[in-house]
Amino acid sequence: MILHISDTHLGSRRYNRDSREQDVYDVFSQLIDLAIREHVKAIVHSGDLFDVYKPGNKSLKFFVDKVKLLRDKGIEFINIPGDHDTPKVRDEIYTQRLLGESLGLIKMLMGDQDPRFVEIDDGGIRIRVYGIRSMSTVFRDSLLNLLGSLKPEGERNVLMLHQGFREMLPYDNAWQLEIGSLPKGFQYYACGHLHSRDVRVLPWGGILAVAGSPEIIREEEIEGWRKNGKGGYLVDLSKKEAEIHPLNVDVRPQEVVRINTASVDQDIDNIRKKLGGSRKPILHVILEGDSSKRGYAMKRLSQLSEIAEFYRIYKDETTDSQLREVKANSSGTISELIAEYLRKQGYNDEEVKLILEVIGKYDSDEADEILKKFAEMER
Image (tube, rainbow, N blue to C red):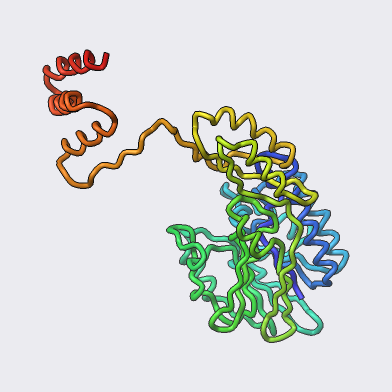
């Protein structure tokens, strides 16, 4: 039995708040407790252990203290570096090397360096865990060559990856792999990088699972959290086919809410009635309505501090109610389209005629005289 987790981003301080950093530590502590409670043989962490490749002392100490609890229970911590863990400066070392090679607290797998796998004995069953570090799109050919060289030889085999898949991230430069390019022979593909959970049974029988981030790091993860929860996967490899069971952690709730400048107090009151639970949420506000009332609405939004740990304007969709919507016909000459637009803006025929003359003679001496005439009409 192993526990698959990923993208913990220890040290992350969203909105530069102490409480958000603590939220990240809290869910990690819950995962450690779950691993001990379930008597797993190992935690496999598929990348982005820390939020930055040079984590601060606070997040380092927190991690060391937690992993010591695992070591005391005989639980291995196996990790591959994610893109956030990867040094951005040449010749810098991975933090995982310090934690693994120097302190002996974790087992780190890179894929292109020894060791090539970590073997676990789970009740007489040999589980081999392989892993390849995060590799950018530039190194896609190298990544494919590494995958092609893998020869799983354990009774049960796990492959850890921290990459984007075309089937999940179909945007240019967002993915490095297609699911069909994965090597066969693994019962479980422990994946990271995406922050929302995803589980797929592969055509050749293995299971691909994206553990997701155990805390809501960005607002686009809210929908996935509501649907699938946050946490890790308990993976049973005692049989030929892997069985997975989601283990959820308690995260700080987050909501995207709409507030209209015309009904700001009522909208806030409705939000207040809707919210429940012991933990104050993070609120992402979509502000809509008349932009001329935006200043007043912003002052009234301060009421959210009473019910939310933090709130922010996520999107400003306010509009100027004085602007008139104008739709021009799609046919006609340029001059005809301009004339139609100007008439819908309230100009009379004589004014439209003068404006068109200015446009037609913008580079001649006559333009100044026409503008003077137009200015006299506007008085």
